[in-house]
Image 1 (cartoon, rainbow, N blue to C red):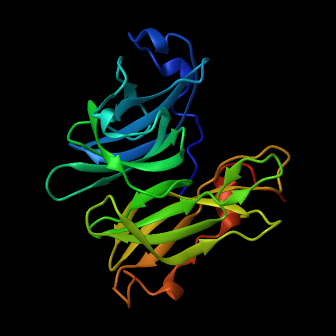
Image 2: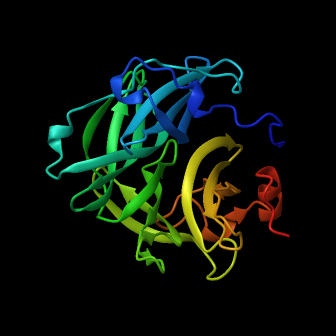
Image 3: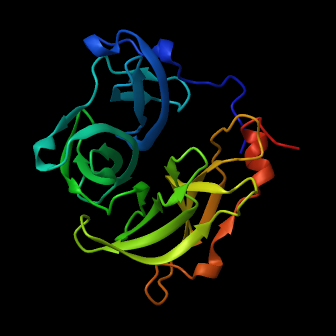
Length: 265
């Protein structure tokens, strides 16, 4: 694995939209990603200077050169949520065998941050099905072919009073809306580079195993960044888990930081 030398591949200047709220984009980041009809598809998180948040679809043949839609993704049926919604962001996408895509997003509401469950066929729109977590939960990624999900409980309170996450847990569901925690999968080490963590995108499958990423906010840097070392987990089912817990491994964090060009040596 090599870091692409001409990063970033998408900047805020690349967002050319007809939507009135996206005429002055301030940031583009934290996309969900999936292969869709032979192309690389990203569901970009885009914000304007009013801190309003939108999803914008971007497509690429080679995974490097992307063209973005000139209109944001429509989000349908939000009336199903009984809370006031402020922001919807940080999509995690998993394809299913029925031709749909299952998406979990963070939803900031007046009652806390929840995981919202959405479905889509083409990412021109997202169909909101319902809230799918307890309050203060983010970074939910469904493991393909299973009814298990990695997620990040936001129970860690920083010195600034903001809640964040220091653990990744595995939960199980029968309907994608009601989830029960099965086990802790990873936990950050206080005062070390991996103190604050969260489950990232599901990248690929290999023989009898899967590979996913872990978002890490290193506390050893003067300015925090987000990097994504990988983890490998076995897919054989153990008692209550889709893999033995001791089979989960971190990819070398120094290599991950080198890929991000931010190694705190």
